Length: 220
Image (cartoon, rainbow, N blue to C red; front, side, top):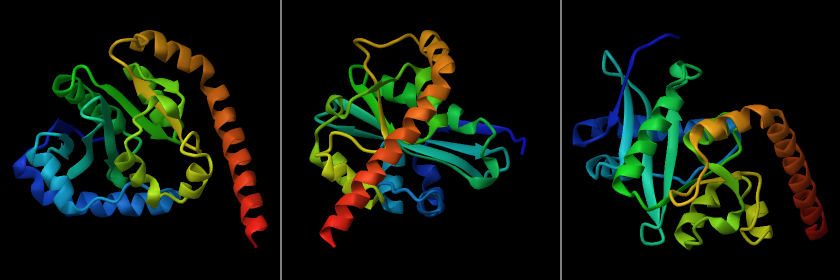
């Protein structure tokens, strides 16, 4: 579907969308068979009031997408969390617009912070690469227990814990303002290696699932 979107920093006047956004986040996670940190409408509304969220609306006022900022380790790390696009507007390029806007907002509010994310989606990895993120090990992410507690709602949480939070099915990506690849360079590199990334993700998933199933069988 072709549509014009207004992508902006959310504020108090957008609180009325919080419940619908929260519900879609939950439904989308269930459909994908993955988990996300569970958030309440009140939590999302607070992010809007704090100026730490980006919302996309259609020209006739329907919500189309959303993302918010979380900070960890005394603002040393920033995560752009809860990226969601309403089902009817997916595959429209809106996710990339939202990620660009929330990235710019993060850089403005926390210019010295490292911006990171965890994802199993190749499309999100591509968007992150275009912004200057690069794949890293889990040890380079925040070690704040509060962040990792958000993974409890994910179906792969047992795998994460079996690896002592050092690895899982998700790929960790990081933008370090002190040392990062230029977006143009990263995009070109990613384009050449996209198929290799996909193969590695499939191998990673297969190995971790075998390890987990073996462990479950031993318990029985």
